[in-house]
Image 1 (spheres, rainbow, N blue to C red):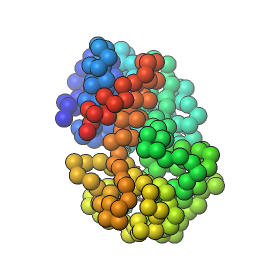
Image 2 (cartoon, protein in one colour):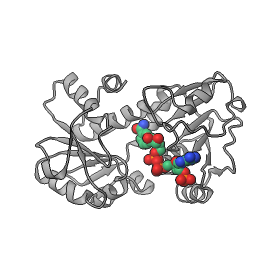
Image 3 (cartoon, helix red, strand yellow):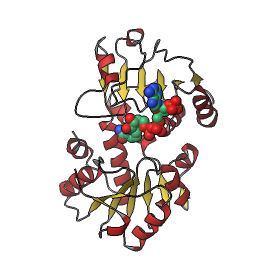
Image 4 (cartoon, rainbow, N blue to C red):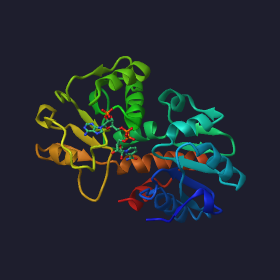
Length: 270
Ligand code: NDP
């Protein structure tokens, strides 16, 4: 685990991840692995920032010469509000996770990063996707999936109203489910925060096609409860490390304009 800095002891560096909490972040190790592989001299640090202090933190970092910042929970909306040049996808989702401090540009790399991982896993449209959850990360995935030709999107959330609002704002063609019905789902994504809690959602993976993919955004040292449910009926499954690497690789490329060593970045967090 890398050292966590605060606004009171901000070090000289080039890039950072900010969050609350941020101690668990694997981003410093992942980006340093990329710099080492390419012989780049940059420093990437983790900085704890309290809610309400994001703009102040970003201005301080900009004055100190930081080039770019990744943003994690719960600061993605505040980061978007800071940006003077947000890209259209980040604005639509209402969240930015990658900032260029020199230009004020901001992106959401979770959404395209997620689609990169589906391509890597061999999922090709047309397919039916069921997304569980309607929080910050679900918004990015639902926007990305609904923009993809040939993908039918259905959403279930514990609080149905929230799913309805999300679909209305981001994906008017998507269906809102009353229960987490997985019938004919080629892709099932767990974007709820149950991932590492051990809570089992009421899911019938046997209703999915035999080659369906169960994708949990959470990751830990063991498969999640969701992954175990899918595995118990022989469905293939993956956790959120691929997404972490893919969104990080896209951030790296926005900042540095050179291809990211994706395999190295993924290896650094697995
Ligand atoms: P949010 O807090 O924004 O949303 C939480 C979601 O989980 C809501 O839809 C909420 O439903 C639902 N939920 C919470 N508890 C339960 C429960 N007991 N039963 C059913 N649903 C529940 O979280 P995020 O979107 O930021 O994160 C979601 C997950 O994705 C986390 O596990 C996070 O670690 C992971 N993640 C992974 C990333 C990666 O790079 N791999 C990136 C971002 C997130 P309700 O609306 O009813 O409260």
